[in-house]
Amino acid sequence: RTTEPISRLRGRFFDREGIRVMPTFHPAYLLRNPEKKREVWEDMKLLIKEYPYDD
Image 1 (spheres, helix red, strand yellow):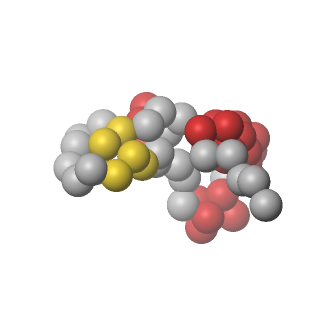
Image 2 (image 1 turned 120 degrees about the vertical axis):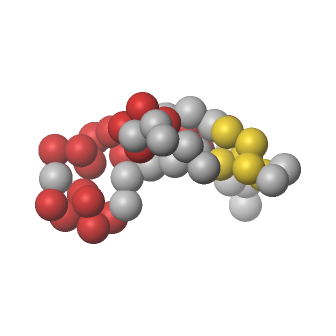
């Protein structure tokens, strides 16, 4: 747990019980704040880069 706001944590990877995680905004937050969608898209691009999908 942390007291840091999600806006400061998002976009970076952290270790949580041996699993790499990256916080980002909740979908309900995006419905209320659609201007934040670009930031979440950047987060998703980082995830894709970190964990590329090969079929």
